[in-house]
Length: 585
Image (tube, rainbow, N blue to C red):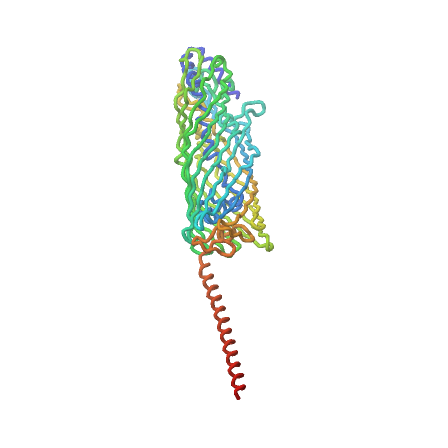
């Protein structure tokens, strides 16, 4: 801060030297845009920086490889075609995402000639590291399904993305925290997807599914920004007296979307699945409340109006997976996916009658215009490998074991990385266990997300100080340089219950979805053609032939019994005839 204080002193000297008019112009725009800057920069928290992991207790135990093998109600996120295989089921689970970050900021400090304003020297400054943490908040899933027809299963539910809700200190060792211009906290934010899904089995080999979704919730973001004039004639770029604490409340968010899925079962050992998630086009009302800077310039100033709207796009995604079962208790699945983050190219913030009053020498009221923030995100790619094994412990108990891993690239170019949208390349490793007792299944998962550090050269950083206004200086003051590290632990528990079928048939004793068999096959949905197995499950490809052989065997047995009975009758008649002949003699 020593260099900044020197710059402030020099700026004051220059202001007294006759540049007051330019300073006033800069302050006017700083004050006017201050009230809306928070919404410009807080909205992206709903994008890549908020979704940090795949979701669901059972799927996450497989490393998120659940596109082809989706056979419980976790399918609503991964592949809605699996809703059919879930049958009539209730799924409840909750997880805690313990998200931790470390940020060591680096910035370029420039010393300028006090007479000309030209840069005479520069050096790189390293700030103290800050740590971001998340509260203990369970992330829930609640879904129920019902078989309305032997070929149809419908599901209704709500789920929340595994989202990081980080907080960073406002001060560090008595000084303003170096991360304050990106984010202080997102406490109070909530996000959920409510939807209706349907799974259809037109034949034994095919499953089709679709869902109608609503993204609902709100974001509450607290950030610090600066009203300092970028030309540095009146203040230093990060001078605390010019800081303004601002809170954005965006919501209610109500955004429709949908997803589609398909599964092909060419053989009992193979399943192939694909799914597509439509984009979310977010356009939500917002409210902005600011604490104006403590500088004397703002002593009589006040904000009037707080309403605005925030619009941006969240991406489409596509998944493809192949599952193989080398033998009945074991399955292995390989998945790949792509997310179209390039459509998230900008954020538009439109204030609604937001004005500042009582700024000496400036128009009163001073209205705030629409703002567009460039994002420049790119597509992200991921690959997942998972396996699941189920063992019969007893006649009434099944033990399920799972493990898997995934790798995902970042959607954010390094030059646009910040603690607000922190999405680093990462590897996730998951371990899961299930215990099935009758129709009940109890699930648990632990996963660790290993984030790869991202280093942003301060000379390449492209997120400016939160102060979007015109000034006499060509270079913005960038604040996102430095090293970013992120990691997470995920702990979750869940419960699945398999109900009776719509026709009233009870479930199998194990009551759940076997790996690679699907709940519909073992305990859930009926045969697509209406024929039920004894346990209520749908026939797998090849079951028809086995059933036919069993019927032929049964008919053969009946025929043998009938032949034996006829032979016995003939023998009795022969004995009767022989006896009658002896009497005649």
